Image (tube, rainbow, N blue to C red; front, side):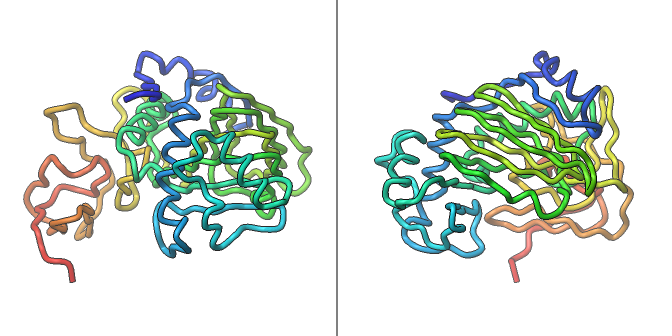
Length: 306
C-alpha cells in the first residue's frame, strides 16, 4: 500500500538506543522510520472526521476533537477536513481563516480502527521495540494530530500514566517535560522524520509549529503485570485484547497464535466480531483465529448477542 513504511525485524536496530538506554528511565529524541507518511495520515484523518462534519457523534471511535486557543469545539462541522482539503497544510490554513482565531489542533484518537493496513504497519514498526522491552499487557492506543501554531497544555495537570512515543510526520514540534513536582524541566524538539519518547510520570506541554502532523502512541503503565522481554518472548495480556491495539502480536501465516502465560480460571473473554459473537466456555481448545491476547485455552461457541 502506498505511503506506508514497513519496519521489519531487521530494522529493529533503530530501537536499540531507546530500548537499552532510555526506556523507563529518561526522555529522548531518536531517528526511527515512521510507519506512515504525512499524506497518508491526512487521508485517514479525512476519513475519520467525515461523520463528524454532519454534527456531533457521541461514543464513537475514532474520537475527533478540534482544539482552538479558546477551547475545543463540540460540533465543529465544516471546520473539519473534507474531500477538498487535499493536504494538512491546505486544511489548516482554511480552518484557521474561517475560525478567525490564531492556532488550532485537530486530534483523532484511535484512528487505526479504520485502516487495517496502517494498523498492521504501526504494529510491525513497534515489534522491534517490544522484543527488547517486553510486549505490552494493556492496550496500546494511537492518536493522529494536525496542528498550526498551537500550544497544547493537555499534559500539564497531572503526571502521565502512559509512556509516549511521538513521531513527527511533518513540520516541527517542541515539548517541555516536568519529571515530578520539583524536577527541572526538560526541553525536547523534533522535526519531520524524528521520534520523541518520554516515560510515564511526566507532565508535558507541546508547542506545534505552523504545520505539524504527528502520530502518537500511548503505552499504559502496568507495574503489576510486566511483560517478558528477550528472544521468543510471548505477550502477557491482563484484559481482553482491543482489535485496534498496535501492541497485539499476530502469529505467522498458517500457525496458531501463542498462548500467553497468564493463569486464569473460569475467565470470560470475547473476541469481538460483527457476527457471530464468540464466548469463552473454559474447556477444550480455542481455535487459532483468536488473538494472541486471549486469556487461556477454551471452547468458543457462537451465541446471539443479548
